Image 1 (cartoon, helix red, strand yellow):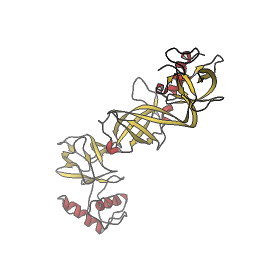
Image 2 (cartoon, helix red, strand yellow):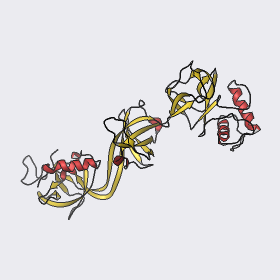
Image 3 (spheres, one colour):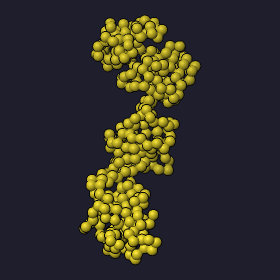
Length: 354
């Protein structure tokens, strides 16, 4: 038998499959080993185990925030106030001010591109009415896309609450829509600058933490939309996450020394409120691949290279050892799936000493 001469090859195969190799914790001295090992017995043994074997790969990612976008000015004038970088702004919160007049955040998928007034219809009107209801200014408003007299009354109540002229109409100089709360990632202008409609004022993100991954194509195949992953945060804590998006196009990486095509993958957290860490800090994601159900497996180190070029294990029982040829399956978690004549869960096989 040849154990050490083939371990490097087996380990290389296991590494390519995403498995680890730290499996010595189950090893025990071989039966009858009391300082002087009996001839032919291995230095230690480990049990054959039966159960599910799951392949996984750990990849490096970057802790960040969801949904980066540009927020553009809705009116011309001088910027007199800007929310600070890192600030999180919710519904009706101040984003920036032009000529002393605040522009506030409301939630909606469509942008604020026009002045909304009586008689208008559209998805942006529906969004406005939903916000007015949520803020307590339009409890009787219908869930529709018509700007009614009741909508104008609700807008006037909102304007009064913020010290604005009661016009009953509202435009980009007063509100901006975003999908939800936003976090100010950076300012693209400064207080005192002249703003113009369409000019970028700040870069925002969503308020939820995410991990961004850039994966080589073979590794990206392990990422499944909606799949559960484990994430190790910068402080060493481990939490669960979900693959929320997978890019459809592979693009060259940012590293000038490695232009291997990569696919962008985003992981969201199952409990985002507990996620801490500096923006752009590293995080490690464990992707789960194939699962083999109810199989026999042994530590990778138990494998022997037999004389005919096949693989085997050394079964130890009743103070004796015998070689058994095996067929190999999946490598994962520092173990390898095996099958062969007479093998069963609980039998002990030889492994290198711990």
